[in-house]
Structures are given as C-alpha cells and as structure tokens.
Image 1 (cartoon, rainbow, N blue to C red):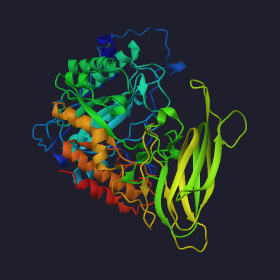
Image 2: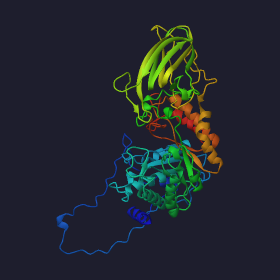
Image 3: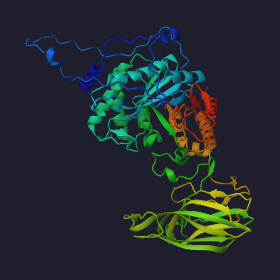
Image 4: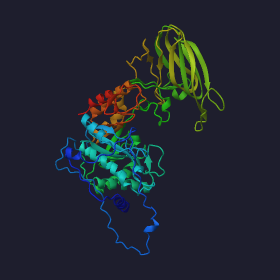
Length: 574
C-alpha cells in the first residue's frame, strides 16, 4: 500500500508550492478560473501525451547521457493562516456542528462533468447569505488517466485545490466525498470491481485517501473534512467497518488529526456503532419518503408511476387483500371512503398488480354497484405485463389499467373490496362528476404505500375534495422523526457525531409540497442538533437554476434564484 501511495505522491508532484494570502484584497489578485460558458461549462485541459514522436531532424548519432533527476517532492497545499480568523466551529468525530448549513456542489460529481470548474462566485454567494458548509461529491474517474487507478491527472486534482481554497477564503467548511470510489458507486454504470470483497480496490481506495490527506495535511479541521464513500449498501457492518478502517488508517498515517465522516449503512439511512467506535463521525440522508423526493426522477426505477406527492399525507396502502385470504385476516380491510356524493360520480380506478385472481366489488351505502373478476395468467389478457413468480408458482401480472364505476347520487359511504381470491393493488382513484355541466370538483384518492400487511384506514373527504386529517394515519414531521431520525438522535446522545450529508426533493415535485416537507425536516434537524447539506446548490434540487415549472424565479447575478426556498433555509441558519 505504501509503495502505491509513494507512486501517487510522485505522480502528483508539482514544481512549486502554492502560497495563498489570507487577506481578501491580496487574494483577489490571484488568477481566477476562466468563466464558464452559457451552459456552466469550461473547456477541460487536454491530457499531456508522453509518447509524442520525436521529429527526425532532432535525432543525432551521438548518445546524450543525462544524470537521473531527483524525484520532485510531493505537493502540499498551503495557505497562510497567520492572520486568518474564522467563525467556523471546530468539529470532532464525537460532535459534528449543528451550525453546519450548506449545499452539495456537483462540479466533480460525475465523469462527464469534469469540465466544470468550481465557481468562486458560488462560494461567495453562499458565504454572503450565511451558509458555511459545502460537500463536494466526486467521481474518482475524473482524476485518473486511461482508466488507470495509479495514473493521476494533476490538473484535475488542482480543481479540488480550488474548492478548498475558496472554502478557506469565504469561511466555508469543505467536505470531500467519493461519490464514486474504486469498486463502488450508487450511480450508473456500476464498478467492475467490488470494494466490499476485493483487496485491490480496497487498497487503491485507501491510497487515494492517503494521497489527499498528505496533500491537505496543513488545513485545519475547521475548514476541511473527508467523507469516505457515498451511500454504502445494506451490507454486513463488520465488512463496512473493516473497509472504512483501511481508508481511515491511510488518512491518519499522513494526517493524524484529520476529521473523517462515513455515511450510514443502507444508503446512508442506518447509523453504525462500529464506525463510531473507530473514531469516525457519520452522515445520514433526508430523502424520505422517496415517492415525494424523487417523483418523476428519470434515473429512479418506477418513479414515473409514483402518485402526485402531497405533504403532509395520509398513509394509504396500495394492497387490497381478499376477505378469504387466511394468512391476512388480521390486516384485512377494504377501502371505505366517506363523502357526500350529492350528484352521480364516475370512479376511474387504476388497477396495478393482481396476484393469481381477485374478485373486486364496489358498494354504495351497502348496495353492490360493481363487480369484476381480475385474473392473471399466461399469454394475452387484460394485463399490460405478464409476471410469473416462480418462488410462489403464481402469476402476478401488472394491469396498469383504468376501470370505470358509476356512483349513484346521494351515496354517503363507498366501499371497495376484494371478496374472493388473493390480492390486488390500486394505483389511483379519480372521482369525476358524471354531468359535464357540474360545478363540483374532481378529486383523487392515491394510495401511496407499498408496505406489506398494513390495514387501510377509513378515509374522510370533505365537500372540497380534501382529506379530513383528524384521526388519520399521517406522514408528517413527527412521522419523519419517529421512523427515520430517531436512530440518529440516539447515536448523537451516545456521543457520536452526525449530520445530514444530503437531502432535498427533485424539481418535478410540486413546489408548495416541497417547501412544507422541507420545513418539517428543518424543524427536526434543529431539534436533534444535526447540520445539513442540501442536494444541491445550482441544479434540479437546489435554490439556483433548478428548472421547476411552478416557480417564479428571481434573476440574481445571472442565476435563476428560488427566493422562497432560500428564505426558508435562511430561517434555520445560525
């Protein structure tokens, strides 16, 4: 491992030391990166070709004997801190600052974004608004040449230098993270090697972190931390701790005091007490519920079928179990919808999955108004996708099709039930007045929970087509705290440092829903003392250039600013 690290340090060597003044006036004279073009991109420097052919006229018959050059000393990033003062808190692995508030900056997030230099203007804006934290998710492929793990492109590493420099200059803590590490990523394409099983990627992973630790060993923890790898899967905790320890040891060999943060297990959702015992802080995520945060996200399988997000929202299970299904008697429950249907309505019910067969019935005030036997099988049928489950020897075909029921005027209680068979799922229910001249509202009931084995609550809908929330099972801030943040609160109380490394909602989720959901999260983060970094700053989840169709953007220094989201975040900045 040390041999590989020495090779990396030599390859990354530079012939000079960078000295930066702490005085803002003198710093302003430093060369700034070229301004990005209208797409936010700047040209990427070409790799140097070390195999250029020597022109024939320069070849002589006399051999030239040269003394071997001494290897260049490894480059160490330096900043003059003599007169530098800071308001940044001092973080430790036992207590990460609750005052850390900021964003993820995606300039090195993915190979292909490697021509996006870090913007000093964006650091300046964050600082002026009062934010003090920037997480830098990085794709290691950006700084290697020819797909060779040991061939480092110094020009790309210098881009990281710039982020660290801007952080110091504008009093923003920079947290470097491997979003893609040798052997593991949550992104596409997957890595060919396996960080959790294979020795070679584990050694390279540790060596790369050791290389960065040596480079930035002069930077205090107030300004810099290392977040080892993004969102590990739900693997064995012993394996995770073992791999993270290798990287931590490589870092601490070069810089014994460097603050290290590891994401929680299960994609950042579960804290690890083995990681805590290593002297490493941890980072969680704030992407719950996924059908709200990733609604219509193109990269998320199934997101195109998520129901339109609401917040807070009544938990409505999708599964309708048969009254005759013996193993589900304890949770058997029909949809019971209480509403004054003062005129005739159409109910268009979208049926999802049918397991084997399910006899579906609808009743208005106890009188049957509709019945249909849904049956899955092989070949052609009402379904759109044939699915055979070999482990259960059953067809569970996907119908994804609307069926229309007419509800008589005067109905007060609508019951939707599976009276025989196995089970089925319901994707959506749309209620529309039969009369085209009606002034009554169209309204929806959209099941939103795929969880198996839970009862369906009775649903009350008022004259405006809105749910009556009183007494309902609701997803809200308290639900988020109890179901997702409580384990992290327990970690903090036990003496483990923790923060929210990523959170946010994609730009297809209605803006008013996002803001209500964000406020509940911010209240929870504040209550348990967790700092946070929104995903992201200048992109589809963020406050700048987010591309939301339902936001009236403000022109701010050439950016499209979501002022309402910014003001909400600022309410929680210390």
